[in-house]
Length: 126
Image 1 (tube, helix red, strand yellow):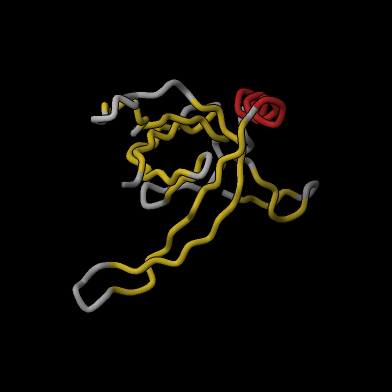
Image 2 (tube, helix red, strand yellow):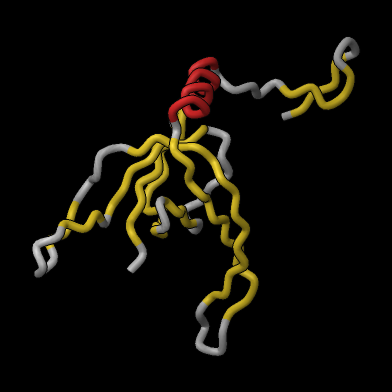
């Protein structure tokens, strides 16, 4: 929401990030790991009715939380299928988007916003 004040001119923004969000962003700049957010926009559909998307990417910093679940494979290796990350509150992200971490792509299955950060729950793309 934008208002006009004589002393500030037009476009003065009242919606300012909270101090917690600013502190969280400073911590991310110091200790965060890079994550690529892939914003997807539906452009058309195929002849079978499946949507086609265009993708734009931007990199932000995140904190990774411990793995939410793991799946056992026959070889005995553990493969993380779900991740949980914390990103800045103002990062433009929707549930249709995807996130790339360390070369793996993840679907966004949940978005929770707090006053300091946005919590994303991710599931690895198969």
